[in-house]
Image (tube, rainbow, N blue to C red; front, top):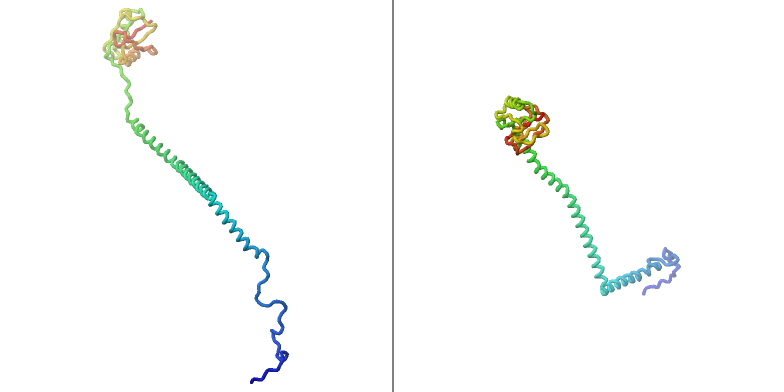
Length: 219
């Protein structure tokens, strides 16, 4: 039988465990603050409120209204974006359309401008020296019409007759005049006036005369 150890506590050498520190020693939880203890209840309360609002909106139809409002806002945004895009496209296309119209106008005008030089100018009518010309004396000076008729023959006229104004049965004009019967004889009448030196006298249309051109000489 083993011999019982009769030595007491004091007979052993002391170590670190014989002098424990004051107060609790080791791993332990400290006292938590009131905010930390209340936080879980706050979270539960917020979740409960959210759940209540969700159920209320579903059963009262408010959720559908919210979704409908959101959809309408999205559609308005899309419409505005489309309108802005269309306006930008119109503004962008305007210069090109203007350029096209300018090019078309230039192309349409070019042929006419090019054709203009090729068009020959209209020739002015020329005097027909073979037309019949009557020189009527209204001055009362003898053989005055005969002398003027000779001047016309010398100028190249081939059918010239001298007479008195009374023999033609025409009303006497107020001053010297050269009448022509139709528009075809206008150039011939003007040449008669030039050949006789009658600068500034009237050259007038008179279909009643009996010859293509009649030069009435007044004093």
